[in-house]
Length: 215
Image (cartoon, rainbow, N blue to C red; front, side, top):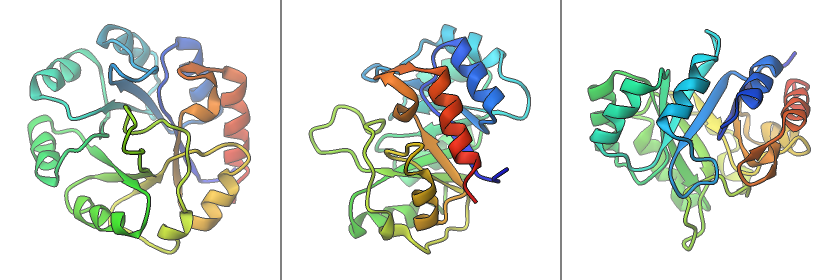
């Protein structure tokens, strides 16, 4: 079996959480962003998170969150990591880490070589980085758009913290993506959906089988 770690994000139903865990996902992601079709309430996320076994990391995706929301989130939902997916500055990343004591993953959107400098800024403060496709200027969501970026931009690049590849990964291109970038962690959402926000257990199992076949 491959040592590739997989994060399945945007889960909202217990059967899909179970399918992801049973298929070998390393991370389970819950989205807290009202504009997303994958958004879940704190109450629902708590119920889902309580069923995740030890050893599988529970990650909360948040977008430019205020402390008041984070206070309630962390008090309500048992979490292992926060994923910041908005315009949070490196200073804000540090504030959140210091305030809550949880590992923080910072998502950084990439469209061209000019975006790579942001990665270098965030690796100095985040526990992990998520290298994602940069959202179009007119997009109402910062991620989860199912689009890839030019993987050659990060080919051979390494950072001093763990990193995760995201953006348009599917069972058909995951091997190519890993070969092109050297990623050992990947993040996906739309690839295991029949419609935006509608996960499918069979698609989850199929993707995980493809991911585990990657050398």
